[in-house]
Amino acid sequence: MAGMTTIVRTISRLLFPFMFLFGVYVLIHGHLTPGGGFQGGVIIAASVVMLWLAYGLAQMPIGFKLFRTEVLEAIGGLTIVAVGVVGLVVGAGILGRVLPLGTLGNLFSAGNLPLLNIAVGIKVTAGLILIFYAMLRKIAWDEK
Image 1 (cartoon, rainbow, N blue to C red):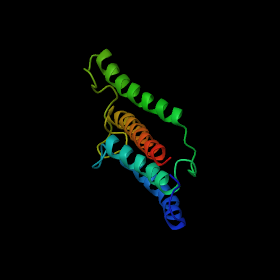
Image 2 (image 1 turned 90 degrees about the vertical axis):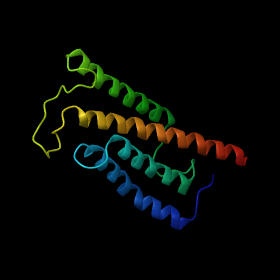
Image 3 (image 1 turned 180 degrees about the vertical axis):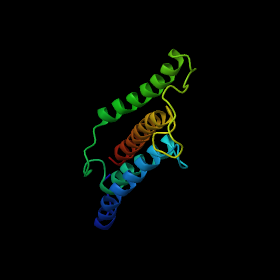
């Protein structure tokens, strides 16, 4: 897969940081506004896929390592399990609230939920990137 025209590459390179930052915003503020870990993870993964489609797999302007993405997906899954088990261990039930609630409307006001959103966001981002990587590799293989 060779990539696309110069206009598409330039626009995607300029749009990437804004999409990525918006995805992080949706992920972190998921307990205060509509969104959360899944939605933020999808937006972040879409920003990476947009660059892949514009540049092709070989010429990505950002560094991409398949092993790092696989490790991130495992870390996201293990963090989800850890948050659940900590609640179980302290007697609050699985995924029970361990961290104290803060003031309503503040960023740190939902106990464990922000940690869970971040873990889900990491898992979803890495999982979707790996899925699209596999699909793009298959397309590149079929073109040979």
